[in-house]
Length: 197
Image 1: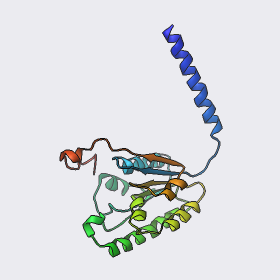
Image 2: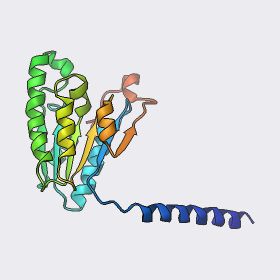
Image 3: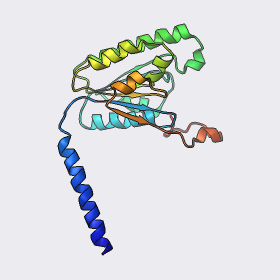
Image 4: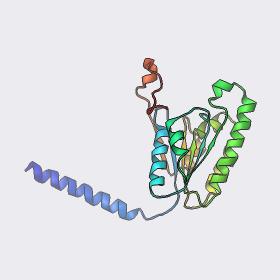
């Protein structure tokens, strides 16, 4: 009897999922926004980069905030012919403590990101830690929103960073709020190669 109930429940679930898949008939570039205080926003965006590369797609990555930090993904992506990258040269803003310089570097990096967002040959653009550039007022939010709205129609965008603005949330097709429950760093465990770097 239990097996029959399980089978009936799974059949209802399958019918529901199949009907939702059939209704999803719009084909367009989407904006994915990954925000919140938890670990994994940038890592998730890089998972989407791997998916895109697996299909032979072209990718543009603009990294704000963490530009001078050497990471395993940077070493890997540098070897990928379908990836273009732009890194903000300041690293973490609390290291420079120079708003004028950080703003200039953000504008320089944004100009490269904007070129990706205008290039029809680039299928996926990652704007890593862009949310900080808005909240710190290094970049003009309305200019960013206008550029996102006017990008090539089939181009996908992934935006990461804490405390996403209402404007970014409104324009995004998918928003995930990554919650922080526990983090090794709070237990004095340093960043680990292959996991954090």
